[in-house]
Length: 60
Image (cartoon, rainbow, N blue to C red; front, side, top):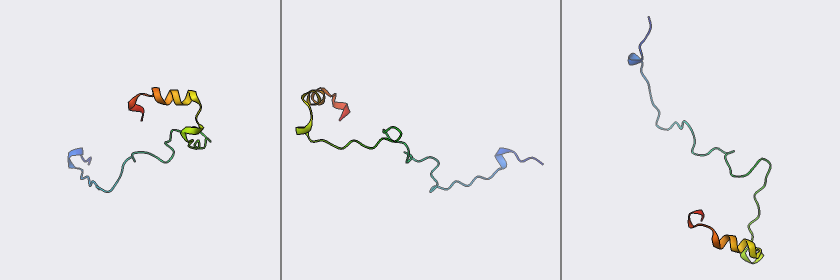
């Protein structure tokens, strides 16, 4: 005898995460790349400083 979907009991566990917000391999880096070291503003070229000054506010 087949059981209809309405007759099935389903137990939902609140502690169970179906999908995490971000997986361990979900990064902005490419394959095999290491993160670039942070440089101080004194080490930046004049062009880099210009680009930072022109950066839109929503990129900060």
